[in-house]
Length: 113
Length: 114
Image (cartoon, rainbow over all chains, first blue to last red; front, top):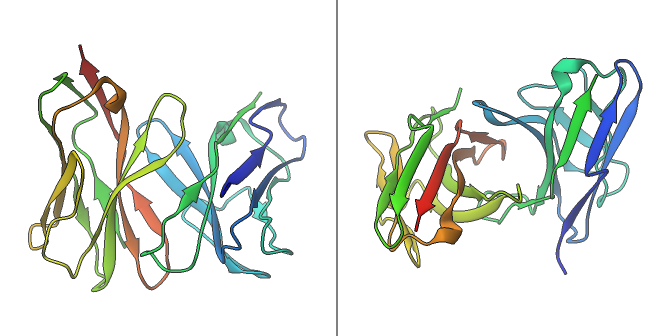
């Protein structure tokens, strides 16, 4: 089954404690991205990657890091989480090209205390 | 820069009736796409419909259709014969063919009433 998986699905942490949200896709997609969803703001792109070892900032990259060492994985790293990073996070993937369908992961609900 | 505006935070419709969700956008791109996504209470993001900007014909998918007005930069979604399962938040989005990035609107929460 074609899918994007994210782990964990729910996470409560404290300010400053490093965390990683994993994202994996099984469709051999080139393009992967991370979004955060906040009430009244919709989804905003954090980082994206066009292929292995190729990543770039989206619209709200501050406080986040990513890496793309393998085509299937695109982890999101919060080195020192702060309460303003409390949000719902989505990973997404597709073949490069907007004519291709973008697949979203199930979302990760993060609460930073 | 690209922007997407959904001016209706919440809407409701009676089951079996028709409802239209509004979306306006701004872009300097010549080659772009427009999308409507559905997010039910499960939070899963589901593609409802996609429109290529260079195609004048409005896209349709079963009970879902769009009214694409390129000059006015408007991209509304019409849901016909509304069903209870259509209750969800709906996001309008535009994407640049150059960068592949999607820009989302704020979302419209739609409630279908029995």
